[in-house]
Image (cartoon, rainbow, N blue to C red; front, top):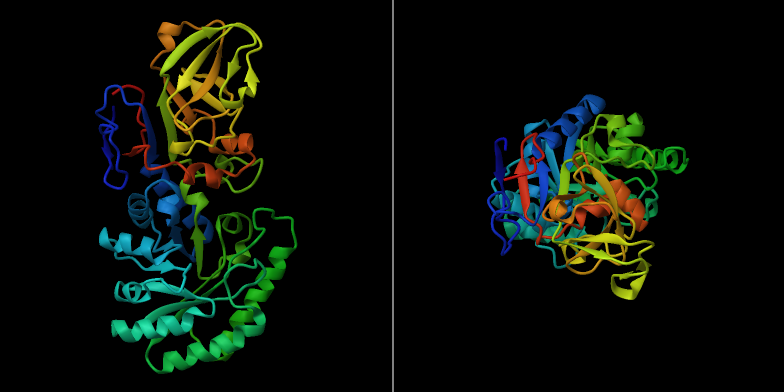
Length: 400
């Protein structure tokens, strides 16, 4: 096996280290070389705009610290998290790059974020809390003002925008904050033919103009997510927010990541734990929602929804020794069943590697299609029970 490193501290597990367990039972292999290549590819597309690598939700399940470092090494200059608590973990890990956190409640640790030099997004109500926290931290806050251009989640409404600008200006004059950014979020950039993105960009431009007329001098203006990065160059402004694309997945239905020069960064694997022959008409799984159509061999895979495998992924594909087999029956908490057909050698297939997705196996998008979901969810939901193995351009070949 080629040189690689393992990372277990963020994923407590009772299993042995994924690279020394013999044989290992399950693992998510994270190729950091692919993360770097994805960032470099996007940097070529968006230059001279900067890149904020989005590492919320523990780096979409890939490991926020490791992915964040890889992204910065490849040219990203910012990292973004949903919560201040996520950003604080990056600071504890020694990451010093600019960080933005944008999703808050009244209980958010604003003072801790300010003290750790974490930029804070403000949509309205947060402004007073951030000013009070800046007083507590004895340090001005760095703030990005968010305008709701049509998504309907966070962000000031256009009607309240000038009021927010006025309040932010007063706090800035008092030395409690420095408004360094303005941003918004697109709703349908993954459907490039829809006109709403044009409407949102126009609303964003109007909000920027009002803010600049009010005297704000922004370091960064940002609205583009991965689909907008790939389809709307006019949305790049000073910085783009690279989420899904950093992990090598396509945001567009029917289009592969390879179309954009992106490389998937996660490979999810397990092993066959049991093989047995059953007759035609044999039920499989809770609810007996599947019955075999012929005498066949069933293979048991020791991963389930407690590992983040979607419970409803009946008929999702897996790869075993280069052959694709379907998941059959309802996926359980710890295991699922695949139909191996009548012609396999059970002794040879027992213990074989099962690729759920990634590498030369099926894609995360195929699993999303099988569950009526999206590939974002498939990778993000992989649970801490699955050991992460960090590799550099190898995918961790079969064998120990």
